[in-house]
Length: 201
Image: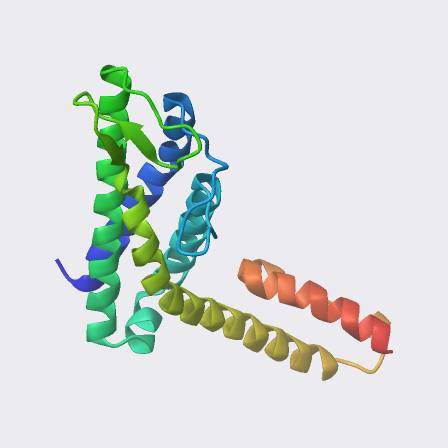
């Protein structure tokens, strides 16, 4: 399996588990609003949202295989793949633990996020906390990909603006043709361009 195929497969698996994990945490009795992390920057809810946003960023850019391969190096892709694997395993293990807590009627620890008492009476913590490190290390890649998407939108807007500016001097002469051939981003850019040009004329 090549790196891109593996990355996409992991992203789908992470998204699937993440979607159900927050509900499972609540059902099991965890307070999803309690803060944790090096600077108390996360709650279980905000962590779930951060994972969801990151996954969508990656899925958006990897949808264009050629561009993703051009914009990233092999070692970068392998690093992304490795971090996504770690993230997946922390989510999967947390899911397994939550199932055990439910079936064995274990108790959560009040005011301590992700902590519970094992059947041996020991304080344990869901592996979900391990995912924080993975998220932090994936953030630079996610921001890079987000920037690429933003640049594409700017280029699409610039191209449409240039076309419209050369189509005629009057706002009444600005027409939208063949919009069925435009992507959703191009259509949005076209509508925004039309608005700005009307304001400028």
